[in-house]
Amino acid sequence: MSDKRESRKAELRGRLLDAAEAQIAREGLASLKAREVTREAGCALGALYNVFEDLDRLVLDVNLRTLSRLKVMLAEACEAADPTPRAQLEALATVYAEFALGEPQLWQALFNHRVPMEVITDVYRTEHAPLIELIVPPLGILRPDLTGANLVQRARTLFSAVHGVVHLSLLGRVVGVPQEMLVEEVRALVQTLTKEPVA
Amino acid sequence: MSDKRESRKAELRGRLLDAAEAQIAREGLASLKAREVTREAGCALGALYNVFEDLDRLVLDVNLRTLSRLKVMLAEACEAADPTPRAQLEALATVYAEFALGEPQLWQALFNHRVPMEVITDVYRTEHAPLIELIVPPLGILRPDLTGANLVQRARTLFSAVHGVVHLSLLGRVVGVPQEMLVEEVRALVQTLTKEPVA
DNA sequence: CCAATTTTTTGAACAACGTTCATTTTTCTG
DNA sequence: CAGAAAAATGAACGTTGTTCAAAAAATTGG
Image (cartoon, rainbow over all chains, first blue to last red; front, top):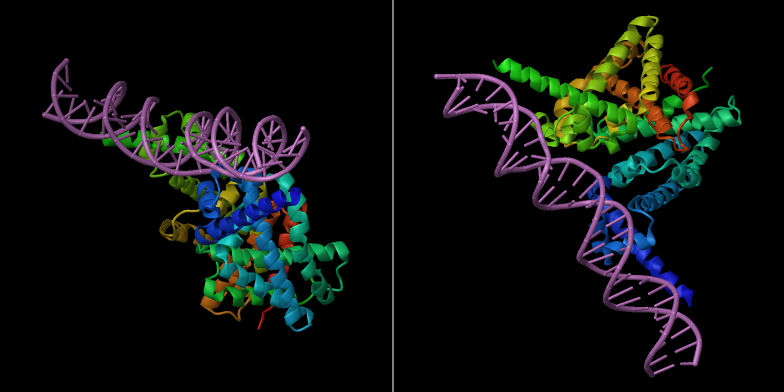
């Protein structure tokens, strides 16, 4: 009868994840407190450390959830959009920007969270990769001059460029693009970046 | 004889800034501690709060220093490079990437540091603006189709795109470009983004 | 069904953090 | 040089994340 225990543990895990996600979404990653999370999840302070190794590990799992949701939305956008490669890439960038605008705190938590490199490479490798994999096919059509490795490289650069515009815009400092123009600007960026081959 | 007092205060201020900068450069923004800074600066713990309102304010001043150095390097790169607008922009992007690679912790502190929006807009507006102002002239030559406001907008987008590639590369997660290829990739990005007008 | 044992849950206690402020030390002034 | 003003000090406070002995609950053997 260990599935009873495991299911209760999984239930608590879920409540803690919900509470942490809600608090990050509400107040931001920086003001996530172990005491507030456990209070909202309805358990003792120490219970958190029976389920998660660390508060960092809890945040990481919230981030994995966020990434999952983002991946789904990106995939759906691909299917809904015109099948032309240009439209596909534009849809991806648009959804990415809209996701960041819609849930800024959860999106920022993806990148502000510092965890040891070993954990990162193990977990994020499999979770971040799909974002790039959605970009590669349409970009490959637009850029037949690029071989496999170079194509992936350029996909990463394209993603990073869009990410940078979103990142600085949400940071709200003067360098960034005003948020009202973010989606429009990201679209223009994708247009420019997919226009034609570069030496 | 109040200049003696003020000069001693300025001296302590300098020592605290030096210590904080060194510690951020060494261990990163997250592990900057008030006690360690004051110990390294050779003063009491409370002395920090006679000179700076806050630990956040100390970090902000370290960031302003870093921005100053970066601005100088960017301006120098502009003068040293070919006077063609394309070469100017490429030089700017290269120096930006190299600066981030050379002092990753100080560079990251510029963007990971969260301070109240009021302070940001007051201080960073005058300090971040020059980065954009270096981009506007050469970009304006390459893009005569853009009017004043639109040109500034596109300059911000160009800066943000380059920033994004650098940011994700330094984060060291899988989405980013490998650091060995960062400068090369940033150059290619600038080339592509300055190629020709976009509708 | 109960007692013994194992497992889980609990929250007081701890170390480390930023920040404050009464006290001491130093500096300036008449 | 004495008295006043200013600056430097570090003990103390409130909050953090994390631990762990003790309490509570669940499982098991007779």
